[in-house]
Image (cartoon, rainbow, N blue to C red; front, side):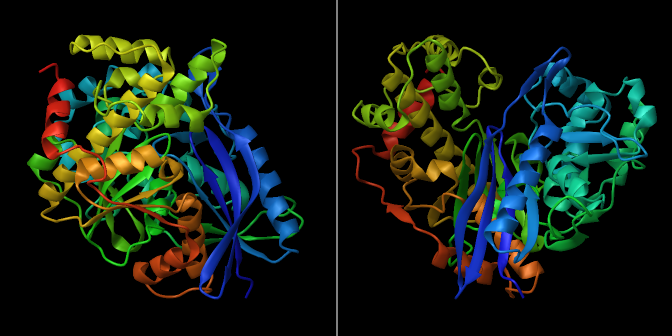
Length: 492
């Protein structure tokens, strides 16, 4: 049995093909290919260049085959959530998939809830209300005559897996971001699909493929794609699901932050929380590996800082990230904080101007200095993490004794230390490539190179990771300082 696997990990700003070799209880990762990935502006809105991405995937997987001397056992794909491609009966993509930051869904949420009460929808799907959720994207497209030509709708990781091996499925972790899943049953919600068909004429459930769990071996790659066939495995198709597999924890009493363009903040549970209080608090129940539920909130994440960096670069004020964060760390904590989840921060824009406007609305003055803006973003993120982790524990009736930060944000020492201060909990940062590692661990088990449950996979994650620990109390930031900061975001 060859113990080498390839993770295709597609984020909102970059994609990568990572090779993982399992040996002596640990996984060694190496990068086969990294490529830019971002929104494509078209005449009718913002899209994804899916075929261009697949070209990069093919190149990366072939590099992985070559680098391993033809001993690559399998490949698995994970991506961001919610977006999809529509295919005709010949399997042809009807149009480039829409990007979740496209604003065509801005007015759709209210329209849906006028016909389908939010309490009824949440009781089935348990999903945080965000305007880009797949259900709202479907309704925004409801009048499109192209639906008559649609044979199947595939979410992004499932679309790429289909192009790799020819099998059309819906992996449950990515399907749980749609608003169409009964998360308690881990099946499509017949009630929700019937409503969408009756109210909007959408062709459900006929266009939805069968569901599969993470670790399902889909079959070999199609002839001619690569120099040799490779097995395709449905991993945790939602990148956060793969990331949480890699959380290097020896207990289940942890909070997690999958930190990157977005921050996914929450806890891993044995069952969803579908209470009215949970709905009012706007928590989401997304599915994870081995029957688990990721009980979390989407927090705006490092997108805000990344967008500032882009703006400064276009203005000829390019910033070195490491130097910028060092300068930000020398500024007073919690001087200016904003509601980092304000919807006005979501689309591509003049982000520094929007941050200054949000600060001004709450009686604060934010300097145009990049270090001050970076400090505002990092402080505001830590403040949001504090609120979400406290709420998640209360709603789930659980306690957290540690916060695990995985993904690119785990390299941000200022953010990690402030998270420890804000939550009053120790923070363990790493692995940086947590999503790719979790993806590979699920493949390794599916292909027989590993056995056991999540505890066993996490033992391998611990052995495979360089971790850094942060303790609360290093900075002079008592709980009262964070409570005062929370009031500042509301102008109080």
